Length: 101
Image (cartoon, rainbow, N blue to C red; front, side, top):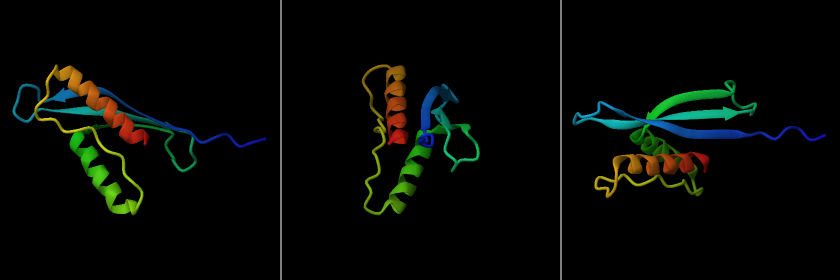
């Protein structure tokens, strides 16, 4: 009998605009992690993070990655054609793909 396969799923969901209408508004996302891996003491965890924290994480990964390529983040668009909701959803999808890779 084979041991159960270790699985980790991560979801980026529930984008929320913080400080809406002010000059320092930003969007944060709920990051939900579920795993059966023995390497994790908590089998589920949930935090909220904003885009710049993903940028920080990617930099840390790059410092320690050696020759292993680190996945790209979705672009930081200061000029976006389309609705804000559409941009937030595209970014959410891109952040989810980043974490899955």
